Image 1: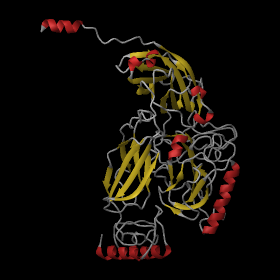
Image 2 (image 1 turned 135 degrees about the vertical axis):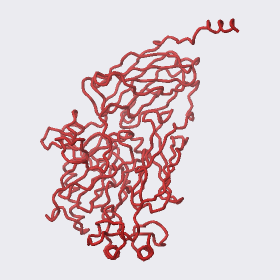
Image 3 (image 1 turned 90 degrees about the vertical axis):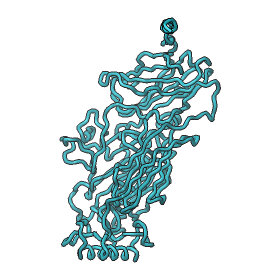
Image 4 (image 1 turned 45 degrees about the vertical axis):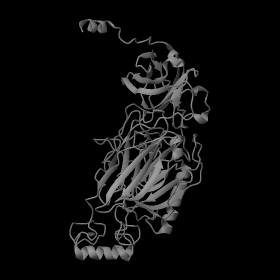
Amino acid sequence: MLTLALTLALLPAPLDLPSRSGSVVASGGGPIGQTTAGHSCVPPWQEAEIRAAVVANTRALGLLDPTDGALPPPAPPPLVRFFPHSINLFDDAFLQYTVDLNPAAGAVMDFACGSPASTYDGHSGNDSVIRSFGEQAYGVPVYAALPGTVVARADGFPDMNTTMSGQPANYVVVQHADGSQAWYLHLRNGSVLPAVGQHVRLAEQIGLTGSSGNSSVPHLHFELRTGAGTVFEPWASAPPSACRPGPSGFVQQPSFVRTFYANDFGITQLNIGGLPATQLPPYALPRTGHKTPAETNIYIWTIFQNLPASATWQFTFKRPNGTTAFTSGQIALNNGATPQRTWWQWTSFFVNDLNSSSFLGTWRISVTLTSPSTGTVPVVTDAPLELRSTRSATFNRPPNAFTVSLDPPAPTATDAVYARVSAPRTLDDPDYDILRYRYVWKRSGVVVRDVTHAGRSDAIPAGTLQLGSVLRCEVTCLDPLEASVAAAPVQFTVTVGPCPADLGTEGSPDPLAGSDGFITGTDFDVFILAFFAEVRTAGGLLLADLTNDTGSGAPDGFITGADFDRFIVSFFGGC
């Protein structure tokens, strides 16, 4: 045994073959979605057109008229509970621009006095940019941030604009109960759902993300205006800054990310340097995830957010046996001394052993970024690249695992609810495919929404749930070849909700004063008023809409005798 042990100890360790058996071939890249001087994604002519449509339609609908002088002072709109996009901010979408709070021409200021500012001169909203036209083609829904009535809309205009040339946008404008408005612009052609005069609920889908209008990337321009028509910035810093005093316009403000990260990543054997403009960002870049020994060079691309100045990146290629085949030197990115909000970069390599059939299998590539402000930080670690003897159009690996959570995690009967996907931004698929997610929402076993799109979140609107119902969301991820992986379903039993007969506050004549936990004659008075006058709650629901027409389900958007019966039973029989 001693002899055997000594013999094993004398065997050589696994050989790490030379680490510089390769070379950098070429590199390129540039900014994505930057504006040019004198341009705004809502040009003055379209802003004037929208305002005129709003005035005409609010008068025709008998709503608060922003020009009649009877509106309240320009108080902030109601608090926003969710950013109205089927994405997760600073994950599968980047908040490229916020509101410019400096009215002086040529000067900019964001809500946190940031430098560089997260806005541009004259910008009036929040621009959440999705990753490419590839995601746009699969669909990325837009929702109502607040309940209200549609007072203007446009549809039918081209939706893949890449230059800001003053084109008309597809849009929706929703007016809320206090006269404030939300503007949603750059929607996808043919996707605008509500009609003028239609009431939309909190988190109800109103369209899909596009690049219509004065736009160079697929994004949602979300703009809030007070009842007096002034632009309102919902974002606030903590503690409040001098640039934007006052509390946040969100019920719970999302985290705002100003630090560097990689938004997307891919590997291909195609020559990116030779591609036409219609295959470069914001179009979807090629992403094959495998190569053959005969395909000489390999091309690696990344989309960066908050790219620091004077940045370089470095690559390490590891063979299937874990040994290092090639480590590059530091390669300068092309942004020089200028930080960039959004930037894409590619570099091509010749790696000797990637052109040899002796090393077939799964290679691993790691990338780091170095800059004076960040030091050395990872971009992606162990990204897979399959070296195969032949190219196959059907070679494919299913997406990587992911998880889902509910937002809010314990919804009540009156809540709108989001399902949020948690997955790596850059390694969500081993072939770097653009993925779709199928969301199946069930209320006590009955499907209430079944939709597939590219967004990493989905929502059901307020009014979908009812006390005692079991909310369940099943999410499946699919790649372009229909390979799929499912997350464990998320499920919650709605145990908190209003008693159907508890509509008013005792002694208050205001039907919107809210419930007080007691059933009194005030509740009866409020119900009768709401039943005949079709009063709506602060959440946008019909106050007297307690059930569907059969009397056995959730509110259905109509007031009928079944709602009256439900109230009477609850009023006299208790909850």
